[in-house]
Length: 337
Ligand code: NAD
Picture 1 (cartoon, rainbow, N blue to C red):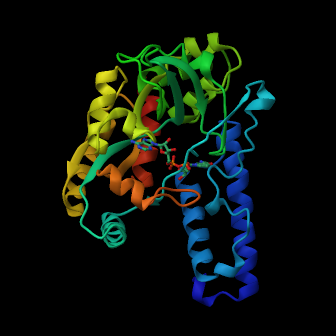
Picture 2: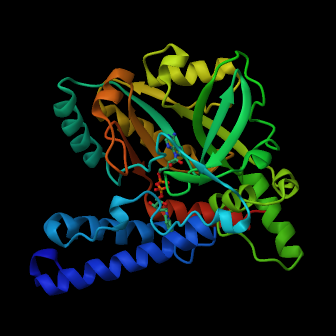
């Protein structure tokens, strides 16, 4: 039913039903690493909830999934035996859009808020799970998952088994960095083949396989599953001495972090279309899964000025690929081996 044709009672009921579904799916996805619906189903329900809350702001529930990072996630890792880690700087989600036009509209708002036209750093949206890595004088001392954004799970022992992640940086910096842990397509296919042969349930997609493999009590299991990583963020830019997001990535590379090389700086948002088209075409051939493109204001002072909401940054947004693409990819991964 079109939102304008709903009665208030109907709208209230629909808001409750959508929230209940999203929280349940969130629990399956974030806690159990075992979703029962495809991402596009989740995204469509989420978009409908956002639209309803916009039309009826007074009906928004205090614990709405639109106001929380990873709604449905009770940081149950502790019940798996993983201890909790507090994130002094919250680990956020990203706002998402599904068309170039919405990116252009978002740019108009950003430009207005920032007071001048921005350059953007475009990055691939890696389909994995977020990780926080703490280094003291260049040594890796703690790794944790995003959890509910404020509290994550300690996965230090597990992350130390990932060869791509440096245990010691090339400079003795004290810094917390963030990025993505993912499972490459080949490792995913191999793992699911082994599980299938052993009569075990297979993982729905590489993201869930990566999450399930990282959030293990026994680091030996993580070590057997080949996980990879790309690092892309720090809240402590001053430690790096750079003033752009593209500069951050270059510094990360110097420090020895794995950094995805496909980022690109654009000076006007309309140029984003070329990048999206390019990676829509290349997506199948990449050795890792991507579910979209992340657009980030390149100027770090401006990033700081634009700030964040309780759930998402105002200086960054994700463009998500259409669902047919996602389905094709999952199909390819499962059936080409
Ligand atoms: P998200 O995964 O859509 O986007 C935020 C995340 O993107 C960040 O936390 C980060 O980990 C990741 N990311 C990857 N590459 C990045 C880059 N280059 N720069 C910055 N961040 C990058 O948001 P979310 O809040 O984690 O999850 C919401 C999404 O998860 C939904 O849109 C849906 O697709 C999926 N989901 C699915 C189900 C389901 O049941 N299928 C349930 C819950 C969530």
